Structures are given as C-alpha cells and as structure tokens.
Image (cartoon, rainbow, N blue to C red; front, side, top):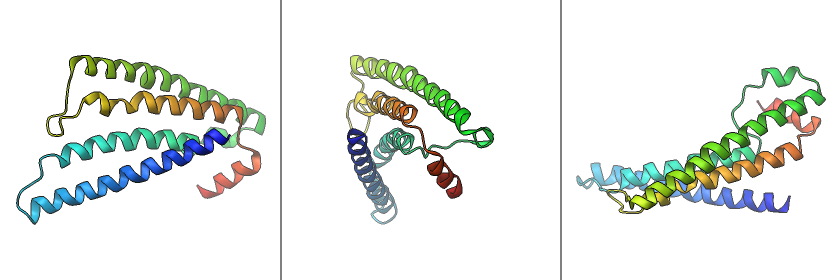
Length: 165
C-alpha cells in the first residue's frame, strides 16, 4: 500500500500542476484577446491537450480514491457479502475496459500517430506525447481496480462514504 500512497501523491501533484497551468493558460488567452487585441495562437490547443491529460489522470485518481461517479441503488440494497461480490464484478469490468480501450487502444493510437510523425499545428509537439496519457491512465486504473478488489471497503468506511453523498 506504500506504492499506492506514493502514486496518489504523484497524481495529486501532477493534477494540481496541470490545473494551475490550465488556469494561467486560459487567463493569458482571455487577456491577449481582449486586452492586447492580439489573440495568442497556442493557448486554445494547449488548453485542449491539458484537458485531455487532466480528464484521464483525474479518472485514474478517483478510481484509486473510490470516488468515481456511480449509481449505487443496487449496492445499497445488498448485504455486505453480496456487496463485496458486486464491487468485484464492477472493478473487474472497469479493469477489462481500461485494458482493452485505454491500454491496447491507446497504445495503438500512440504507435500510429508516432509512426506517421503527426505534430500539433500550433505547438508543433508530437501528438503521441498528447495521447500517451491513454495507456498510462489505463495502467493506473487497472492497478487501482486490482487494489479495490483485493482490499474492499470495510462496512464502517462504506457507511461514512454513503453519508457524504
């Protein structure tokens, strides 16, 4: 679990940095457009790419914190043993999806874009650098899903999280 704590801290730091850069970037975009009357050419593209990274890494982070969006009408009605089985099935499906769509599909996307040598128009960075977050995020989601299966929430923790909703 030490690795999980370290990964949580790394993700928290990276997400805060991405969000801070996004805020500064958008403020510059608005300022250059309305104050300087000369819109910046790269800010729109940078904001888009930062949002991709923020979304994928944020989804990975909330999977580890068990804070992902869910409809828990069924799980609330289950007894603790069936709730554990239910969560195992859900996290298994999440891990399978993350593997197939994000790791396999994302790796294929990165390979294709890299082999074609595609770069972004304004920033002129390789698009593979933008899309590499897909397999990275997928691997993190798989890791957290396995942790969530092996270490289910205790009943007292579950009642606390239900009261927060």
